[in-house]
Length: 325
Ligand SMILES: O=C(O)CCC(=O)C(=O)O
Ligand SMILES: [Fe+2]
Image (tube, rainbow, N blue to C red; front, side):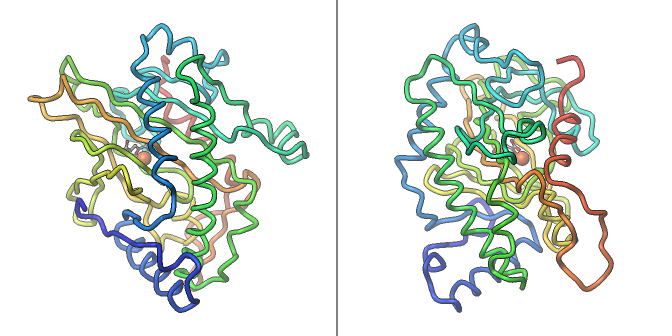
């Protein structure tokens, strides 16, 4: 599978303590080395994944004018359709490149309880109503079903992560039980004109949260991750599996024991660029906005000051927005 390790989760889910610890330690080994792996045996039903990929593809195939009707009226709001030219992910890692050659759809949780955590002024910064277009039919339902499946999976995975880190299995539970995860449907269109120098489908960057869980199609012009010796390794996306990678907050939380690794999405080869479009679905698992991310991995001094989950992401969204857009 494209050079990154594969972990089969099926024996860990509901398995013995010894088996869960074994899988946790496998995750630990990989996350110290490259921070990227593919999961099989994840238990998410294929129809849930297919339904969101199909609706997303149908949306991106609509005429631009129709897609633009799903742009959020308040500029910079991380919901709805975001057109080409608005974001350059590399800016979040202080690398200046032209805008990414992608359009995307941003959404979050569909509904939440009527409680102060969500309804307060601060809560409303993270719990924003989704914006759904008139077409395609079933978009919101497919998105909600997928989001729910990812929530279940990430709770399980963070427990295995805790086992791998040698901390109590349920350490993360109350820091992710009101998480602020946003999802993105990324669409990288056919390239009918050559990209500008340095322009990629997604510039080199790290992700911001705990785990990113990515599902995609099996097409060229795709994801690459950097190895410790500086090479770019192709990461294949398989529609039946997920690619998982560690984000910045989990790297900070583990005091750099786990690596939030640099990755990018490259342009398709010239020979097929005019025909090569690509879709990916990303669940950017992000803790409760009030979770304090403080070194959990003694011994040794903490390398980073504590940071609040929500404030950290706000800053990254601000940095990666192309100034003129
Ligand atoms: O589309 C992909 O394969 C990865 C996209 C990505 O890295 C991101 O949106 O953060
Ligand atoms: Fe990313």
